Length: 186
Length: 422
Image (cartoon, rainbow over all chains, first blue to last red; front, side, top):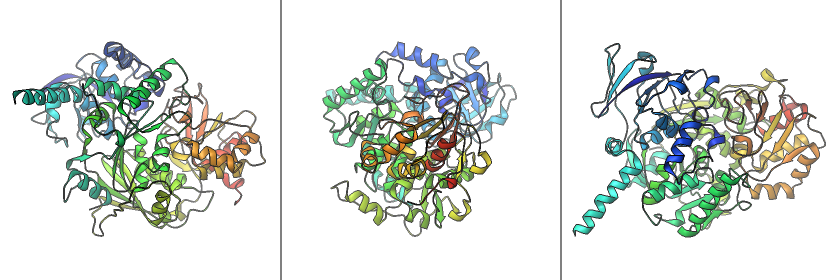
């Protein structure tokens, strides 16, 4: 599975309050997927102009398929899944960082979006670079510098299948379908 | 193996587990609250499953928006209540019956030593105080836990935080935790577990220990944990009829690292300067900083001993004319005890507003939200930029003693000036 995109370079310690402010947590109708997605996409990174670790034009210029490359400790803080969702719904398809906080790491993967931690990787990218990630091979390439890097993720064996299924919920639904068919075959 | 490794091995049905291995464990207890409960339920419905794996293993606590503040919060709480009734979940804490989830889980004896707990909240780590593996997850994952009762985990290597010596009041466990975070930083324990040991921890009350496990997450840790001792067993015996299976780390357990601390090295009360919980300095470095709000409460520091020390400082005194002082007990049980001891009257006399047990201005949920440029000194756990209201507001973290002293002067103040031994 190969992911290719334009890089947005973020700084260190990007926290979940920064990604999705607490005041929006109860907003959004979770029973209506389209309304919810629109709300979450719109409400995220609301204070970005005040932050030093996120580029100021990220909100206005982020496009579908973009990839964030961040310094250490990406996603520190809350378990609010909206912090991961807002990035996905704004178009970000993957996050690569020197290190990633556990809950954000899980949440982003669960949405079907890879979160890849590789110490030192942030120094190899700038905003606007083109990046290619090969998930099964475990490689990251910077198309601008031509340099390639290897990563070794500590994830369950089924994780990449899950990403291919579109995330944790669709993956579990597909498992149920298989189980259901097996049962009816008997 | 360390305590956390032994719990994960047992729950994975394995003899041995090693740090950074992926294991799948059974979940003994799962907690949702009002802030993310309705989302969890929507995801569970999306899975197309009718019944949760085990309603007796789910605890539902309404705590962020107590009582509901608007139509959105009321609607989501209604959805949660319907789900609770439909699924036959007994452990449900309605507004006015519980308090902050992390406090309720421990004080009502829900979490037992040697078990696993997940919650849709990063401060679920608090419950590690009973010697359980307790950690936070997102709503999609909780929906799957509701279906399967299982969770995958990367076994965290254990960082042992050993603390020796006696903390001298008004220096509290909060000061110790800020002191520890100063050394660990906000990413010093990513995918690791913090296990607190040593004579300082043994001497500490359960409430004091909860500050340490609560704020373990602030170092990036997966969880925080403390080995059960007699004090804990006595605490739990008063709260549950379940048999208690006490697990300790093996004598030859391998730690990823051991960090040694001396209580004596904490020369003065600590304050974490915005915007990180690890930015701890001695109170004298920031003494005199003007404040607009002083908040005593939260899952970190809203317990009876916290209210006692704050009341001791505020008793017979008046808070600064221009400072908003907010006191919020962590639970109904704490509120009841504080009422019985006369602490609530002291707060009201001093000019504080006392709120119902809820998360309050720890985050931007409900009540005590900060305006542009306002400065708050808070007993809560995070001071990220924009965490509680306007992005230009500033939050300093400190102990209940330091916050109470600051409330009196309207500026960050050293509690040693006002502290009286009870």
